[in-house]
Length: 310
Image (cartoon, rainbow, N blue to C red; front, side, top):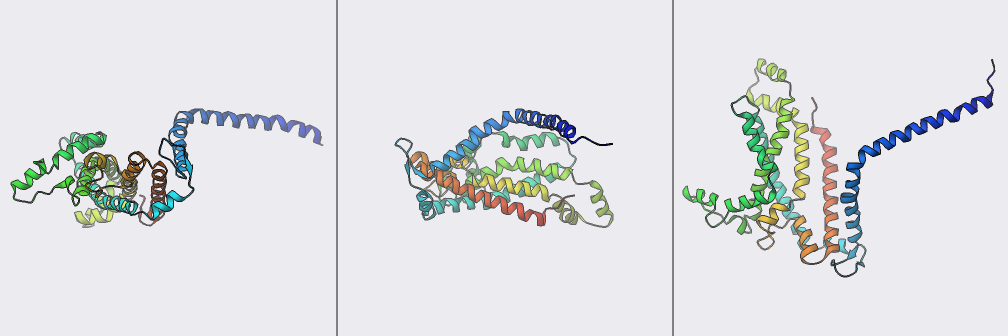
């Protein structure tokens, strides 16, 4: 039996056309369902980011016409002492905040993972600060840490301990912000760690107990390794949030006293809206973006060495 090549060729286009139409319909369906989130993302995230990149190459005060300066804003920031100080303050915040929020959240998760009365209520209570606004939390902690008769200073004075000036002191301003930030985010870390704890098979603990492993050995050999995915997620998110710390600093200290607690985002705000250097502020925000991106890439690469998946 012979096949006419002309008829074979004539039969291909309709099939190919049908496949193409099916692909376009699938793409249209995907685009339709992605549009409610993709359009706002492009308008309110990608668009402003690209605009800020363009602005960072200009000198602009929000009033006068923009003037092209190229990379001058970046070179100025790389040699600026205030920029270095802002990055150092941000790193100081992260170094103090990250251990507190991780260890505290893990301790809460371990305590509330046990069977006890009112466990659900306690979980809700500890998670409540997470959904509370930063302004309210910051104002509350500013009152607690008030140098003049604040709640904490009264408690310290009652037991004969010295009472720091907290947010009014250049030495204690950032520790005050760290305390407030860690307290607010403990519930978030607790929930992530609880999810990780509940995913660990109980058979592993039972087998370890039968083999004579104590509580510390079970925690060190089973809990911590199998919590490493949750730990990685918490550390990465906390690092990203730490580099972007702003709200609590703005409310509690305003970057003071004497600039002693001004992080990078506060410096971006001051440059853009207090001093009218919008181009320089945009350039600083992009430098911060690069730092966060580098940290994220490094964390993603090294997590393969210590993250254990059950």
